[in-house]
Every structure is written in C-alpha cells, then in structure tokens.
Amino acid sequence: MTATQPSSAVTLQRSLSPGRRARNALATAWMVGALAMALVPLAFLVGYVVRAGMKAFSWSFITNDLPVVTTLPGGGIAPAIVGTLVITGFAALLAVPLGVLAAIYLNEYGGKGRIASLVRFLSEVMSGVPSVVMGLFIFTLYTLREGLQGLGGSLALACLMLPIVIRSTEEMLRLVPVELRQGSLALGCPQWRTIVTVVLPAGAPGIVSGVMLAIARAAGETAPLLFTIGLTSTTNVNVFKGTNTTLSAQIFANAQNMVFPAARDRAWGAALTLVVIVLVFSLAARFVSGRFATRTQHGTV
Amino acid sequence: MTIISAEPATVEPFGLTGSRRWGDRAFRAVTLASGLVVLLILGLIAWSTGSKAWPALHHTGFAFITTDDWVPNAGHFGAFGLIYGTLICAVIALMFAVPTSVGIALFITELAPARLARTATTLLDLLAAVPSVVYGLWAAYVLATPIQHQYQHVSDALGGVPILGRFFGGDAQGRSIMTAGIILAIMIVPIVTSLARDALATVPQSDRAGALALGATRWEALRVAVFPRVRGGIVGAVMLGLGRAMGETIAVALILGPIPQVTTHVFSQGSTLASVIALNFGEASGDFKSALIACGVILLLLTLVINSAARALVRRSERRLEA
Image (tube, rainbow over all chains, first blue to last red; front, top):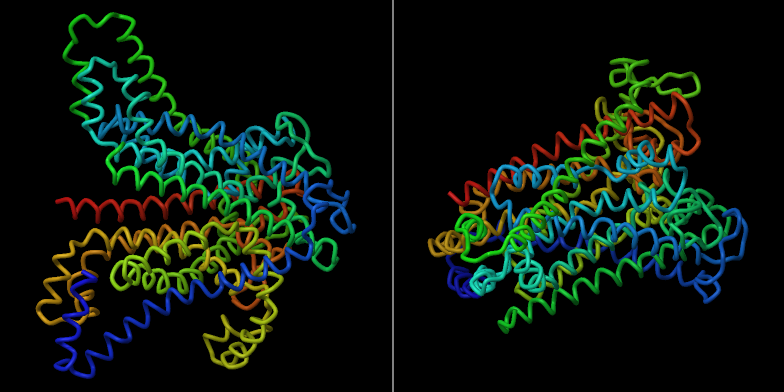
C-alpha cells in the first residue's frame, strides 16, 4: 500500500481542490504530531533520569547496604537490587510453569471448547485486575497470616504475570505449524511427548520472549509490594524469611523525603538502576524474538 | 488443530499400551489444572478482599459510595469523592491519550514506511517499559514546577467563567489532578495504540486501494473505507485504556501526595481510590484498613465492568471481520 501511494498522490495532486488537499495535509500532520507528542515526554524523562541518576551512581552505590532511614546520607542500594531480582525471579518461577501449562491446555487440548473459552475469558479478566488490588489480595490472604516477607511480593507479582504469560504463550503455540504435530503423531509419538519435544521447542523463542517481557513489567511494579514485603536495610536473599525491599519500593520511600539531598539522589539513582534492569530484560526479549523471526524465515523450525 | 488432537484419543491406536495412554491423560489433567488455577485465584481475590472489606461496607452501608465524607480518624468513610477523583483523572488521561494513540496507530499502519514504523513501535515499547514509579517521580519533582505556570494562565483566564470556573479556577498547583491525568495519558498511550493498530490491521488493504483508485486522498480513504469498520475495535481499545488508567496507582500517588482531598478543581490536589490505598494502608488499622480494602473492592468492580465491556466490543468487531 505504501508503494502505491506516492504515484497516486503525484497524479492526483494537480486536480485536488485546495480544501481536500488541506484536509489531507492536516490529517498527516495529526499522525506525525501524535507520535511527537508521545516521544517528547519520553525523551525529557529518560534524559533527566540519566542525568540525575548518574550523579548518585558509583560502585559503592550499587554494592553497599541501605542507610537505616532514607534521610541519612551515604550507603548504597544493594539490598534493593538483590530484592528486586530475587522477588521477581521467584515470582517468575511460580507464574511461568503454570502459565505455560495453562497455555498448552488452551491451544493443544481445549481449542474452542467451553472450558478453554472460560479459562481464556477469566485470564483476560485477571489481566485487568489493578496491581494495587493484587497487593491487597495477597495482604488479606497471605501477609495477615505469615507476616511481611519477600514471598508475599512474589505471590502478588506472580498473579500479575500469570495472565500475560498465558496469553503470549498461547499466541506463540498457535504459530507452530500443524504439520509438525502431524509428523510427530504419525511417527507414533504420544500427544504429550509431541507437545513437550516438538511443539514447545518450536515455539520456545517466542515463549521466552513473552516471559521476559512479563518479568520486565513485574520488576518495575511497586503497588503490590507496598503491603506485602515490608522494608529492610540489609541484603536478604531469602524470600521465605524476613522483610525485604526492592528498587521500586526504595524509589517510593525516598520520594517521600525529596527535600533531603541524600534521599533525592538515592531516588534518582535507584530509578536509573531500575530503568536499566527493565530495559535489559526488554531488549533481551526483543533479541530472542528477533532470532525467532529469522529462524522461521529460513524454515528451520 | 482440534481435529488432530481429538484423533489419537478417539481412534484407539493399534498396540498402544496402557501406560502410554496414561501419560497422555495425566499430562492433559496437569495442563487443565494449571488453567483452572486462574479460576481459583479470581475466586480467592473476590472472597479474601470481600470478607476483609465487609466490616467497613456493612458499617457504612450504601453511604460508602454515595457520600464524600472521608474522615478516617472520626470513622467517616464516604468514598464518593475518591471514586469521582479516580474517574476524573482517567477521563483527563483519555482526552489526551485517545487522539495521540489513534494518530500514532494511523501513522504506523497507514503512513510510515516499514522501517520507520518499526522504529516507532520500538520507541512505544520503551514508553511502556518505563516503570510507573519512575513516571511518578519525574512528574512530581520535575514536571510539576514548570507546568504550574501554564496551569495558572489557564486558571486566570477561565476562573471567572460560570461553569468552566468550577473546574479550571482556583489556585493552580503543579502536583494536581491535571498532572496526574497527563502522566496517565503517557502511560496508557502504548497499550491503546497497540490495540488500535490491531483494529486497523483487520481492514483489508484492497478496501483502501479501492478508495484511493477512485481518487480519494489518503484521509478520505481512511474516512470512507477504514474508520466505519474499526469503530468498535477502537472504542474497545479506549475503554481498556480507561480501565488501565483507573487502576494505575503509584504514579498518581506520588503526584497527588498523601492528604485525601475531594475537589472539582482539576488544578488542585485530589485523590483517587488507588492513591489513597497506596499512601495510607501502611499506617491504617481496624476500620480504616477495612475501609481501604473496601476501596480496593470498588476499584476492582469498576475496572472489571469497564474491561469486560471493552473486551466484548473488541471481540465483536473481530468476529464481524471473520464473518
């Protein structure tokens, strides 16, 4: 379509009335302007986070423990970095196997059946639950009994990740050619082995990419962690015991004391660190899915 | 696909031993159980938050959603003002986000050459990747100061006008409902754009080509051949954006600050359901905590209703395409 437009535009140019030409130009300006409207704030924001974050950044900033209160100068954000990775990692450990298995049911067994449609609908409903409500849910269900722990945060994040993983995995499984399944079944392979050894590996790059995007999204979440993980100033790698903290929680806590230079610098430093972590995951996801695209083009899948 | 998956089960394969059939059945059961976990979690969400919210809802009754008297220390919980704040923030967000998102979606699908379209998509992914808390930090401590002067100009100009004055008058603050709405707009642009693109992609290229061949300009082709067919899908996309904006918490909480406040002025500090929960839950106890959980339940119901309606619209427009 883009190829046909220039020629038609050129031949019609002269016969167009000024009004029609103006309206078309106005519409074009709207489309280009809309993109600019969205990207200008992004540029300002990223620029400011990098500049303000670099001021706080140093080796000790990412390796030292947190000060006991946010208003004190010095210290680093190591516990928050570790907390982010551990809590998000454990959430992925819970949500990914469950989500992939559920997606296998939807695509390989359920199809358009009643149960599958119900699960699909409920998974859509679940993806609409606000993250703060997910936090309240885990608070009422888990934290009230077990106390503030990293695991509470992991459970809340896992609930947020699950519908994303289900949806993206099902979409990837749908792209796996039917001929692959037929070939494997024709060779006498039972269906479950066909799924595990043929279908899943064929869809793997796309599934991994979707999972990594879900992890990146979860790593930036704050609201579900506010009521579930508590706070700590030292590194805690155990999600099952003791309170924990994350980069997002630290940004939120330090933002309450922005008049203190120490808290301000720490907030921006933590923001830069978090953005870098999220970006690394997002870019890795893009890289993996890029490989998927080239592989399917060459027909090796 | 369903035909193939049914075949091995119905046509008993020759010489298939019992253990192999068992493997298939067990695997199917495991995957089904994983799918049903979603049902379990949703049920638990309803039961667990509902039962903890019950004391406050029972105590205050319908007044919880019809009065705007929110004084936690006195035990007064009227969340109407918070519901209003949630809606007004989300509506402001939509007013900025909808023209922008639809414009970008048109730019990517109708205007840009393939490579430029890819770059634009990558940049939008970047916009979606920035965490909510970082948006909030930037809006509250960087954007708020310069934007306050712009607000003041608008407020001075419209403050005396009868009806507009109720919304735009008063003392203009940088960390206000309007700023929250603008930030929410930036945050929902990627999702609304992506869904609007999906809707636009359902219109066959031949329709556009036909309109262009009849001498239509690109804009006229869009109006005649494309817009009538994507209306449902785009309304659905907008409503999903609305649901997203209403549930967004941390950015709004950082912008609006901790004092629950109810106001019609968009340039003053207000409160939303989500922001009040995030900012007060830590210190709350007893009835107050229960009331905050009740706020969460109301937020959940609001977003569920809007999301379900949106999904139904999107699905209907997709189905019409298949037919």
